[in-house]
Image: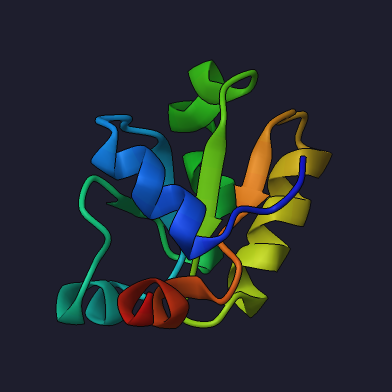
Length: 99
């Protein structure tokens, strides 16, 4: 799946869509600011949360971190686990805030 830009995500949210967004930053980073509707699953805990995400295997999941690096790792990991529609938020939370 191609990655998603902050602009595209904001347009979809403004249109009333509520995509599944997973914030893979650490909890303290999430507490400083977050994308509305996102759930926080720090990258290091993602393997332990797979069972909770199982029903999303065929659905779109947007992953993000601060700048895009950790979420790229999360996308690769989830794809390896059989998730078919994982997209990385280009530029991460920083780009989302600035856009």
